[in-house]
Image (cartoon, rainbow, N blue to C red; front, top):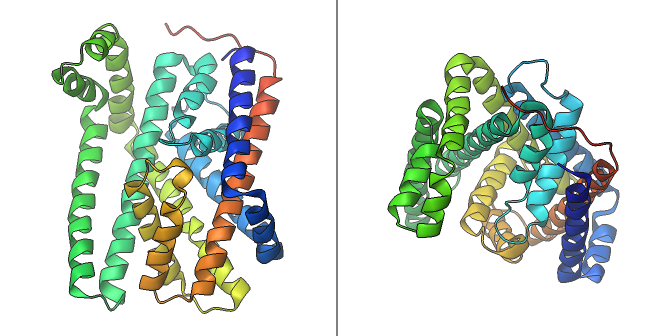
Length: 332
């Protein structure tokens, strides 16, 4: 990645972060800081642990070669990648291209793309495991009406089906299959673009399949660390409840955190999840029997945490733009 591209990404990330603050409202953020008080600090520290576990999962999945980046570099790239995803207003699609560009100088573009896509699949598996856990806890611990129980039962079946598809893709390759599916839609420009890159797509698939077959224990460990990161994130609700003096068990916190994550993926087209996040949090909090005060502080704390870590990621990106360039490595 050239210094100009680094600088351009840093400028774009800063602009989007400022836009996010403007949309939410500086007065709302200031009131939220006063309401959250010093409890915002342990919430931010908690998510440092979450991002560290994400980075560890990604680092474990990388091939153990001499050119593998250090764990510290993986943490830095992960934080920047998540920040880029957050400030991308609609589809959260900025982090993966950055990760590929950051790894390409040492791993080569094909391998970098392969390992980044592999982590995308690992992240998807951990998401599905979290959703399954939350749905199972809701079905077994909450007094639900028939309609809610039926909806959760349907969601359980769909999540299990999605998990089977993702696991099958990791074992047998998914990129080329996806390219063929897109070509069958007869989109001429897209089909021509894919046809010119078929060899590169096959290389990416080969990286995915080779990692699955040659290093299955590393993949299992990576999924474990990433799932642990998602479980640790539920501690945010425990901290909010403790700040208000509200009783909340770890099981209920995990249940709400998982259902909230599931709802957020249903409303992924909403810019910055504005409105959809707050409405979903109110729904899952009510389902778990939490008071409205908890919901309000959880909304504020979550937004402040997102903005703070997005700012940290953008700051790291600015520091990246000043680093000396590393020439891209040409794979043999």
